[in-house]
Image 1 (cartoon, rainbow, N blue to C red):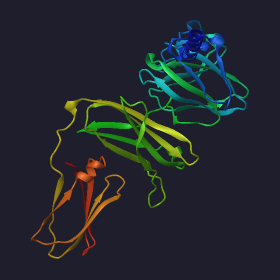
Image 2 (image 1 turned 180 degrees about the vertical axis):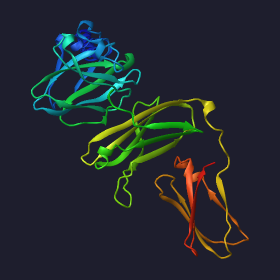
Image 3 (image 1 turned 30 degrees about the vertical axis):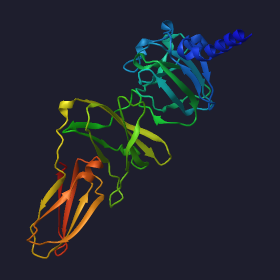
Image 4 (image 1 turned 90 degrees about the vertical axis):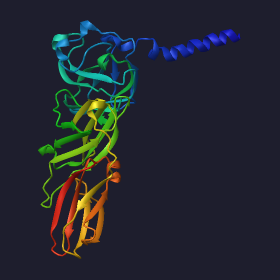
Length: 358
């Protein structure tokens, strides 16, 4: 009796786990495609041991987006015409590359009727949504899901009227980031899109290393308006790198209606010989030259936001014509430069200069 219970328990356990570890999902073939019903709970699936239904794919559509390897099929039907979302969550992948999605308008397995609606390769395990604009009313679409670059993934997918996660960058979108790396510093620059300038609240800068499964927020930059209430369109951020490796960045714009749009992505692999030698110097020496007794204020500013990071007030004396500005605190803020502004309170005049941190 005990052995029978053990065999029954083992069989039940295998039935629960084989779908991920050994089995093949039902919707491996297009004729067994699974319907994703609008705004129901996410559907869990995996790409392990899936095959390619070659007779039902049109490789001319894949372009630079997908490479079919272990795909599976879903379908969904709209209610009204408009914008919908495919939410991907809970990814657990062998190679941390994530899944790739292809949305198709066409008759199943009649590949000459296929029209590509959207295509995206996630290249991460973050919770992601794919925005689908201008879908037809009361209309059915095909969805092909595959592991990106032969990755094997367990994942949840949902057809929804609300986005969840980070916006996915489709193959048709431009990367608006201009990036550079020099002297151990990565710099990302971008220009706000003119048509979005009235709605952007802030930018989120996300970062992950090659070993990390998901992005984390590195910094949040407010969207700025000048003294004439005109939007400031140029933005920049720096990140000091102390260790070799591969680094990935995303910049996401947050809008007033809580929607998001992706500004761009950047990835870089840094070798040990590309990093500067570590400096033991931890201060900047300022040489001052004013009339005896001149009251001065010395401000340390963020090089881009102009936020005051430190203020020192003193009275100039020829006996002490220099002042040391400690830099260790600013290096902990991941700054590679600071702006130092000196104000002469007798004349009201100020001078400013950018300094590279040692």
